[in-house]
Image (cartoon, rainbow, N blue to C red; front, side, top):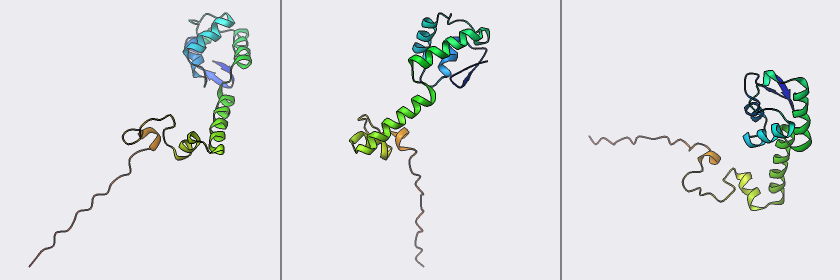
Length: 128
């Protein structure tokens, strides 16, 4: 198993699939990384040499933000929106959809599960 940018890549996967285990690297970017480093995308991770792993690691660190650096950057941007008090920041703070989606119906992912309703049975008055 190869360790790239602090993430263990599964050894039995092909390189282009294994690179998608990194946060911020999808299939397109994985193919781009392998093309620029000159590594066959169909090669298995367990067959990579230490030199190839270091080439991939160096290329990723030089050209992209991935893993922790990307996560902190995204969180910092969201915090900035909240701090300046703009509409998008307000929506982030309330946990509602940010990009104009409707909320009357749907939006359950952002709003969370519906509050449970407790049904109360009304006791019928008995007249005797």
